[in-house]
Amino acid sequence: MIERLQKFRENLKNLNLDGVLISNSENSRYLSGFSGSSGVLLISADTAAIITDFRYWEQVSQEVKDFQLYKQGPNLWQSIVALVQKLHWTKIGFEAATLTYQDYQTFCNLVPKNVQLIPQNNLVEHQRWVKDTAEIALLSTAEQITDRAFAETLPIIKPGIKEREIALEFDHQLRLQGAEGNSFTTIVVSGARSALPHGEASDKKVAVGDLVTIDGGALFQGYHADMTRTVVVGKGSEEQKRLYQVVLQAQELALQSLKAGLIGFEVDKIARDFLSQHGYGGDKFGHGLGHSVGLNIHESPRLAVTEQNPIPAGAVITVEPGVYIPGWGGVRIEDLVVVKLDGIRNLTASPKKELIEL
Ligand code: ZN
Ligand code: ZN
Image 1 (cartoon, protein in one colour):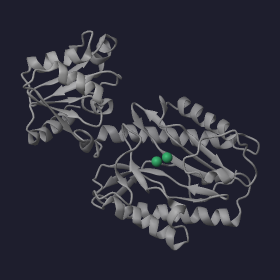
Image 2 (image 1 turned 135 degrees about the horizontal axis):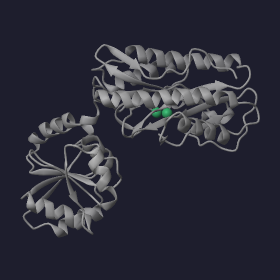
Image 3 (image 1 turned 180 degrees about the vertical axis):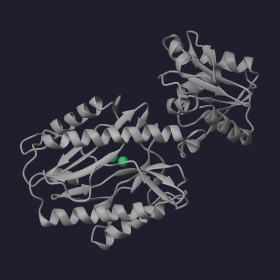
Image 4 (image 1 turned 120 degrees about the vertical axis):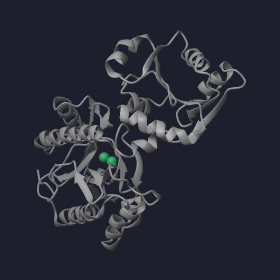
């Protein structure tokens, strides 16, 4: 954790600020290790302070090593301002994407007139693009839990079971296998509904011949897994098997090409062009190829037509091509991978070579 703080301080040097206020809870957790939901960090070249309330004082002392605890009084903003004045900070950066306008106003009203509050973007997020060894280990565990939950869920997928019941079983298995929760609400869509990329699990009963897409993941020590598989109930039709193989080949092609230094849109284009050549262009693959994953389920950099940034070594990112045909159904296959200088390491082990027939 101290390495993360040191690196963050290196980046701070270029900003010409006395210090920064970190109020985003994922950024706070990343830098300090504190997993509570209420608290802020104040960081400068020689200060690392965490302010939180009574509920978390015990927890902070267990989780946080490199920050000095300042106990919050009755009002968080009064406590922050008291510390800022004690530190003689006059140029203070804050996270523009996190601090609400209401809190900003409170802060402005409480600080002396000579104190400047300067909005900052991606103060910590950019550092989080490259996952360190500890983060990769947690993401790998989260994905392994997801693999096991998926395997345990497959046997219950039979004609007559509701999508909602499949999602519930998957969630139950995630928890049994060690997840602290879900990465996001589990998606289960079947039959014609499998053409909904982010459809909610409904009361629809699964029927023979239905494609069933399951997209979900374990939350483990704050880190998110993300995995999608599409299976078929009973024997798959030739058309279903053919589409499945096209989506799989698009994914394999992207996985084989992906390595550090490629621009996000270039990787997206590899899968997108392949699907277009097979008649599945445009709206049939209407979302990006992938997104980074970490303390948040959707992070940058992304594999998408709009992504102009190179993917760094150490990024952990999904590769999830899909084809959606309204009224007929869809197929999506999603793996989570670590990007390396010379390729990738796939964290997902759930089978995918053939369309699984249940
Ligand atoms: Zn997903
Ligand atoms: Zn995803």
